Structures are given as C-alpha cells and as structure tokens.
Image (cartoon, rainbow over all chains, first blue to last red; front, side, top):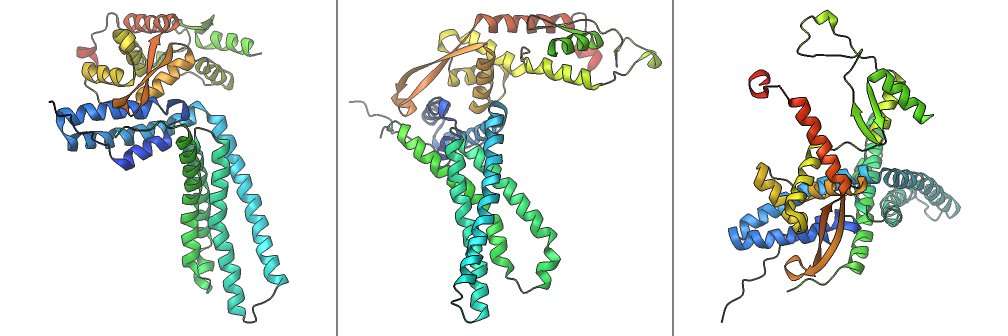
Amino acid sequence: MMSQAPFVRPPRIALWLVDLFTPSEQAESIPGDLLEEFSELASKSGDAFARRWYWRQSVKTVAHLIATGFLVVPWLIAGTVVGGLLLCWVSYWFTQKAVVAVLYRYQVYAHIDAYVFWLIYAVLIQRLIEPFIIGCIIAVAAKGREMVVTMTLGLIIGAWSGAGLAHLRHYWSASNFPLAPLLLTTFVSPVMFALGGGIVREIRSATSRRPMPG
Amino acid sequence: MLVALIEEGADEGGTTMNGGDVMRRPPTSVDVGGRDNVNASSRTIPRLTVRYFLYIVCLMSNRNYIGEFEHIVVLALLRLSDRAYGVTVRQEIEFRIRREVSIGAIYATLDRLETKGYVKSQLGDPTPERGGRSKRFFRVTAKGVAAVNRSHRAIKTMAEGLDLVRSYS
C-alpha cells in the first residue's frame, strides 16, 4: 500500500494576507495558483524552502494588488476615499458636539478634574470607534477593494492627524493636556479603518469560500 | 474637438492615429539626441505645449500600445496555448528569461491585457491540490496576436542596422 504525502499548509498569515487583498474576481485564481505551486515546491524542495517562497510571493503579490487597485479602478477608490473623508469630518464634528452637549447638559461631575477627564476620554474613545464604523461602511461601498480603500483612508487621516499634532507641539508641551492618549488615538485610529475593512472583507470571503481539504 | 486636437497634435509631433493604431512617422522638427547628429547646435528641443501634452494623454489613454512585460506574457500564452494559466505562465517566463516574477504581476498584466481585448479568460474546474479553487485559463485573441506582431515589427525595424552590444554598451 502506498503512503500518501502529508498535506503541507502554507504560512497562515501569508495566506490570510493574500486572501485579504485579492479582488473578488481573482479570489479563486491567485490563492489557488500560489497553493498549487507551494504544494509542488514542498514535495520537491522541502517545507522550509516552500514556505520562504510562499512568503516572498505573497509580499510581492500583495504589493502588486495594491498598486493595480489604483490603476484599474481609480474612480471607485478615489470616490470611496473622498466619501470616507467627508463621513469622518461630519461624524467627528457631530459626535464631538454631542459629547460636549451631553456633558454640559448633565453636569453630574462636581469636581472639575472628573469633568475634564470625561470630556477628553469620551472624545478619544469616539475617535477609535468611529474610524472602525466608517471603515466598515466604505468597505461595503468598495466591493472587492476593501483593504486598498480603507488603508488609503487610514494613511490620509494618519498623516493629517500627525501633521496637526506636529504643528501644535509647542502648545501641547506648554499645557497639562495628557498627550499620551492623544498620540495613541492618532496612530491607532488609522488602523481601525483597516480593521473595519478587513472584517467586511472576511465576512464577504467567508460567504463565497469553498471548503479547504484536510 | 478631440479629433481636431489629435490631428493638430499629430501635425506638431509627427505622430498620427489611424483607426486606433498608432503609427510613428519620422520626426520633422523634433530631433533630440540622435547619434547621427554630430553638430549639437542642429538639435532642437521639443516644446511641450498644453495641446501636445493633451495629445500624448489621449494617445496613451487609447491603450493600443503593448509594454515589454505585456509582450513577454502574450508570448508565454502563445507558447502554452491551451495550458496557459497563472502557474504555467509564471513558470514559463521564469524558465525562459531567468527572472523571478510574482503571480500578482502576472495577473495584473493579464487583467490589463484582457481590458484591452488582447486576451480572454475562462474558469476551469476546481481541483483538490489548489484547495478547491478553480484555474483561470487564458488565450490570446486575434487582436492580441496583431498587437504583438506590430510591436515586434516596430522593435525589429528600429533595431535594424544597430550594433547594440558594441556601440551602446
């Protein structure tokens, strides 16, 4: 009786990255081609070599898929990113006003420190939740290019916030304003856009994915 | 208006469009860096007017030109005939030109060629070694063959009489 060669799985993270960035019309062909060549290489040259090859190919492929997204559907990407920026602007403005209005209306904190604490942290928490929701919304609109769109929006917002912080650095250093949470949200909120996009993409892929063998 | 613009641009730059095909005429007033021109003062620098720039943009958006990598991919498809899909195309290119190419680059090029109408694709049956995913087979259309021929002829014509290794290396 012949023993069957064990099924070798490609690196999980690399596989997930390729799945995440592959447009829906190529969801079968690109990951399938990579898996086929990986299995061939693993049986010929060993697991370690095949894994290294898979990582190299995945990184190059993801870079190409991002660049191709801008060339193939530039208007979809530009439109959704601009829409996302408008949505950010409207929602940040609206929720900040709402937080301030609620805190003024119900002055339940007798001590000024507690009031300032909630004023600052409510806005900061909102700056983490809102990018996630906006990321989900624009990912729904940009079908097949969820990650490209959300990452672009995240980078723009991140660069914008970073430039704003750098511009106001003298003011922040002179005041007692807690800078650490502000810095944290500045750099975490762009990631939240991509997280929202990634979740939408995963849900979409799960509904159309065929079961893997083994 | 666009047609008029293209015609005017063609008059200025020595390039004309004929039924979607791009044909190159020997430049008349514009001649820069030609190796035959020994006298530097006889060289004239082209003036990039807005009209000429728009003409170039129109010409490029026509997308009838075929790039180097596109050329290589179409030739690989022609060699592989009915066995042409991502893996075989990548391996064929790697084997022949000894250059590691990513599968993403292959698909980006194939998609571009499909948009131009130079190749057509169809999905095959899913196979277990591909995790239940289908192969996407590609074949070159008549328009694609014509484009490769045109590009091939143009390069051959331009290279004719040149000793590239000795004179330009």
